[in-house]
Amino acid sequence: MRKILPWLFILVFTASLARAQDDATQQQIDKLSGQVQDLLDAQAAQGKRIDALEKQIGDLGDKLNQPGGNNFASADDLKNLAAQVQEIDKKRQDDNQKILDALDKLGGKSGSISTGHKPPTVLTTTSTDNSTATPGAPQKGYEYKIASGDTLSAIAKAYRAQGVKVTAEQIQNANPGLNPKNLIVGKTIFIPQPQ
Image (cartoon, rainbow, N blue to C red):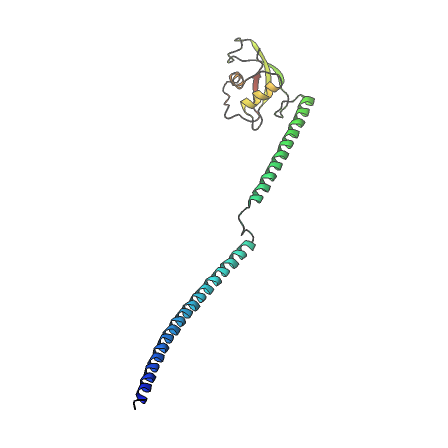
């Protein structure tokens, strides 16, 4: 029995060591299983987030493909637009110059006033309210029929362009009761010819 007892002791000791090793191994396996499960859960969450982002990207693509969906301009778009605006402005200036040249040609041929109205006709009349004229003496001047859009300053400017050096104030003084802010279309007024 003495020979059996050490062997029995060794067997029990070895069995307990194996059991302790099995417990440690089982703990490591459980720990690794938990970590693997955490990784699988994180992967599933990442998959859901990726699906949501893909849906958002798809929605944005649909919005861009719709008419009026792209309301943004790039720097190149703005440069092209600026170039087009400059080209249109240059054409506008060229057209404006052509119109002015045509008006000059028309003004030189017919002797008309640059506002497009008939040329002034010489009229001799008496004006008692004119401060620059001698009282009771006839004053030389022109008859002018007011057209739509006329102002006293525009009329004076048109006459000055024809060589009659008159001011809006002189026209106002020569026409008592004339309201410069409410000119009546078709009314004939007197344009004095300064001495």
